[in-house]
Image 1 (cartoon, rainbow, N blue to C red):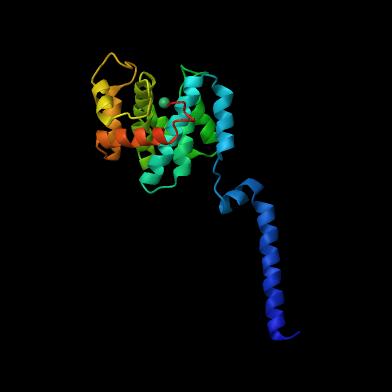
Image 2: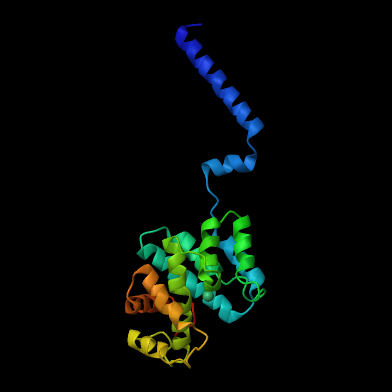
Length: 219
Ligand SMILES: [Fe+2]
């Protein structure tokens, strides 16, 4: 055998040994995680949401926050996919486990390896005082209450989201009796967290909802 053929044969033998050892010592799951991190797809996330949620208004809230989060992710220059999933799932356990929310959905996502999304959802529940470390952690706080509030504003208008002005939303925010469950402090804090003017955030959310007004039945 020529020396070059010997080198090739030797290299091939070494490769076989290392692959054989890898098979022996590395479980399949760990091998996959070396090459590709698990990222939940939307159908999987939607299945989790629909298993725990029947209410039409909660499903619309999930969809609206998903759309706003997806747009925010793109606006801040990050991958919008995990942002969208965070929005879609942030209240997934609220209807079935109101006393434990968001513990159940956070645990489920952690078990599935979706730690970044789980952390953002844990952080959106202010009572836990989880630090908002990532931009996505901050965006879900900025998107959640304010999106719900703007939808509430739209639902009482004859033309719904069409023609809605920022000023009408800011005025209603100052009316404590309107959508009283929406925590105003959290709305103001959300915009501050992401470093946006509140009026810019309101305008951004109105635009997203207007882009999807037919699907969201806001027309
Ligand atoms: Fe929410």
